[in-house]
Structures are given as structure tokens and as C-alpha cells.
Image (cartoon, rainbow, N blue to C red; front, side, top):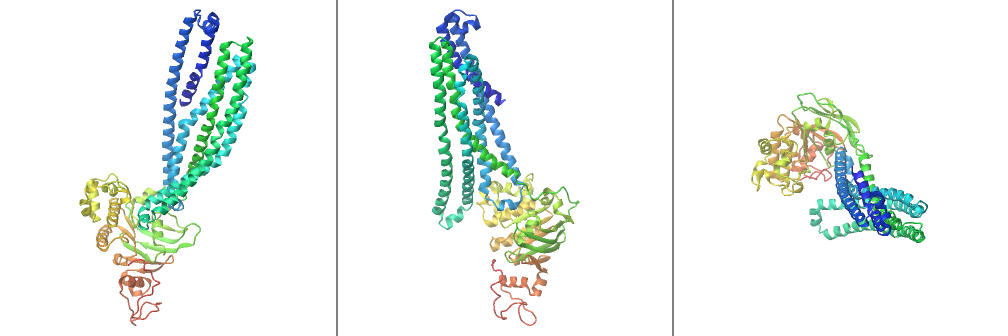
Length: 595
């Protein structure tokens, strides 16, 4: 429909030169004019009135179809922009976490926003321009060959030069606009990264340094644009020369024929007008192809992103009901990319309803186990089983619908407290939201907020303290009523009072649930049913708190570092492998990342 409207608009837009020719013909020919022959009107004054009526009709129709094509093309551009952005965003959300770890968020935002907008601009303007140029060439070309067939070639002679120049410019512009889009993505990524890290920038008085760095990237982007602009701007002046040649030829040769009486004055005036109407729109091909190249550079980036296939694909399976929550890791090996193994033959079982903790030095592989449990990654070897079912056979909704996750890096969305608590269960009632908040010991501080549960938390929850954000994340997980509760350093960034409150809430949450806790602070997991100690990607010790202290191994060493209590054997010496005497502190080589 948009295409038809564009063609009809251009058809009526080309009529005025013919109407001008008809007016000249009436004045010169009188009773023998074209209008007199076609409408059987002999009086020249009456002919002019007929011509005026035709003129009004042509202009009204031209205006009508211009309105129609603008509305249709712009709506089409908006529809395609919307659908493409949603398709791209939906595809990106289906990709595994590893994909995002290797890329800047701002670069992806540039593709989903700026690149999609570039395609919209081409559809808004460029598609209509191409259609109207083609319509002009076809209609005026037909008119030339009907009216002055032997001179028609003069008007079309510049076209091969114009088209050759257009495609040469197009090929030359293609790599330049690809560079423009690449620089735009880099700049967007840096801006996004800096806005997220604004507190760090201020803390290290790095504002001017970051302004200079962003300025350098913005300058590179501007330079890439300037290189494209210098070339694209040369197009129209060069094409004008070709247009001049065709226009001058028609003006002179057609004028000579009119003077010799071989060509009607009205037809000659039409030829002069429409020669310009034929050739002049071709100068806009430069701008149109400029939009086209920008749009195609963006489209290629969008399509490249859409071609990335997720390496972690959900299965069709579901768990047997009721879900018990029995978790087992069976011979897990895992490496990030082509790196060394982070986990090596890790096997452990967490019976339903029990609380198990995983501890170890930084880099031992604790958080990697969490990622495998949530199937953010797949193991290099081995299996993760939930109620005896390999989680790779389950749908994501089934797996993550029965697991609740609380991370040390809490992310809150820009919205109200209630909306953040209900994020995993948006249909929850106010009473259910309050129940989850009370269980997480968050109701007290929420009630003290200016608007209570309707208080806006700000971007990433920046209006709340770390402990408040952490308790909201616990309430968010509680509200989904998971059978398996996974806590990754949930108390690592809070003070002792907040830690105690969170610990109380977690103990209540753990009732009737399988709970897996990743912890640095050993005091928070001393009551766990079983504690597994990771070292260099392997489980080296397992047992409850007292059993592990009695072993006088790595757990005992970590406990001593954090509490100052040095476990002793019957001989009064420390755990095997310690080289210090009975009155010396444990060696500095143990993990001291927590107080």
C-alpha cells in the first residue's frame, strides 16, 4: 500500500509540467490546442477554465497521496523497528551468560537501539525516494519517446554516468559506514560502563581522565563520520555536471526544432521542464544511498547478532511431582572457554531438605558450582542431577521455577520495593509480598521508608543500603517458594548486625527446603548439615563443622584465620602441614579475603 501511494503521488507530481505545456499550447494554438481536441472546447477562455479544473484535481490528488505514503511508510518503519528490536532483544536473552561476559553491554545496546533506528530512518525516507525516482524515469521516459522519439536519448544519455557514479560511491562508502557503526558501538559501551561506575570514578577523582577518554572515543567516531561525509558530499556536485549536459542538449536541439517549426511550442516547453524533472531527482540518489549504506551497515550488525546461536539449549523435560529437591553433582569437570579446568571431578550429594555449605579460598570454584546448578553454564564433563534427573533435559522454566537464587551482587530494578520483591511472581498479592518481606526480616525497614512498599528504589536499588538490598533479594527468592535455595555469598557485603538478621531469616527459609550456601564467613554456615571444602577445583574435605575442625585440615585453617581460635590435636600441635609453632599465628598463605 505504501508503494502504491508513492507511485501515485509521483505520477500526479509529474503532471504540472504537462499542464504548463497545455497552457502554452492554448495561448499559441487557440482553437487547435490539445485541450480543444480532447475536450471539444473551442473557446480559449473556456479551455483555460478546463485546464484550471484539471490543475486543481491533480494538486489535490498529489497532496492526498503524499499524506498517505508518508503515513504508511512511517508506520511501516515503526512496525519493523519495533519487531526487529523485540526479536533482537528476545534472541539476546536466549544466549548463555558466557556470551555477555565477552562483550560490552553498551555495544549490544547500540545494536538494539541505534542500529535499529538507522534502519528506521532508511524506511522513513529512502525507500520512498527510490520508488519515486524509478517512477519518474519510467513515466518521463515514456513521455519523451511518445512526444519526441528521436531526441529522447539526449535526456537519458547522462543516466549511465549517474548510475555508474552512484554504485561506485556506494561501494566506496560501505566500509566507511561499517567503521562508523563499529565506533558508535564502542562509544556507547564506554558511556554505559562509565555511568554504571560513576561512584568509582568520583572516588578516585578520575572525572577529567574519563572525560578525556570518552572525548577521544567520540573524536574517533566523529572522524569516521567525517570520512564518510567527505565522500558522500562529493556525489551531488559531480552528478550536476552530467545533468547539465542532458538539459543543455534538450534546450538547444529542441529549441532549434521549435524555431524551424518542426516541434510545437507547447511540447518544447514540456520537454524543457520535464528534462529537469527527470534528471534532477537523481541527485538525491546520493543522499538515498547514504541512508541505504548506513541502514545496511546497521542491518548487518543486527543480523550478525541474530545469527549467534545459543550453546545452552533447554530440554523438554519436567520434574516428577511433588518435587523433593534432592541435588547431586556427579563427576563434574568445568573450564571457562579454552582455559584450564576450574572444577575437577567434583561429586557431592545434597539430600532433600538439608542445608549444605561449600567453602574454600578465592578461586577454588565455589561460584562456578552455582552457575552450573542454575545451568548458566553446562559442565565440560559430568552431570548435575535434580531429583535424579539431568538438568540438561529440563526446560529453563522447570529448572529455575523450583530454585531460588540470592547472589552477593544484588540487582534491583528501577521500580518500587513491592515490584522488586514480586519480580519472580508478579501476580503475588500484597499479603504474600509482606509475608516474604517479614520472613526476610525486611518488613521493618520497608515500613520506615517514605512510601513503604511503594517507595522507588532507584536504578540498581541505589537508594537503599547494601544490607537492605540483600534482604529484598532474599524476600524476592522466598516469594517464589523454591524447593532448592541457593545462596552465593549472601552476607559477604553487610555489617554484623545485618548479617545476624539475614542469618535468622535464612534459617527460617531453609526449613523444608534444600539449601546450598556458598560462604566465606564460616560463622554463617557452622550449623549446616554438611560442609564441603573446595581447593583447586576439587572437594578435599566434607563433614559437619565439628568433624571438619577435628580433621585439622583446610577448614580448620580457615576457621582459625577468621576467628583466631587455633584447633589443636592431642600433641598440642596444629593441623598437619602447618610449619608454625603452637604459639604462632597461622600462615599468611591461607585465604584472608574475609575478616
